[in-house]
Image (cartoon, rainbow, N blue to C red; front, side, top):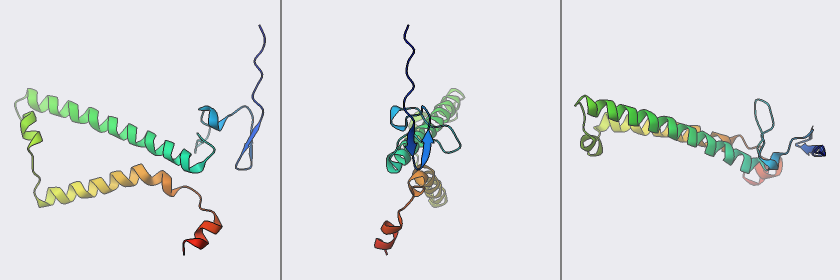
Length: 122
């Protein structure tokens, strides 16, 4: 059986990467993994992964809570669907939504901005 050849070393942001391929779907190891060579696309991947993880956790907790509340006769699905928050609750929900948006889009703010781009945005 022929031995597979190792991919040629690549460079990414000045680093030589032995056998790792950013465009091949395998993240580079480390505290800040790289999935794609383009930092904008890479930030988008991290953003989508963060969003998917948060959506699943929230969905699972909501389904469990709704099932428990209904099984104990505390709240019906109809009551949940027709709920209208008061002003204080609406403000709390708005603050929580802002935190959620911050968590999801934080990766886009981590994209390095080239000096020329900074100067032209002023």
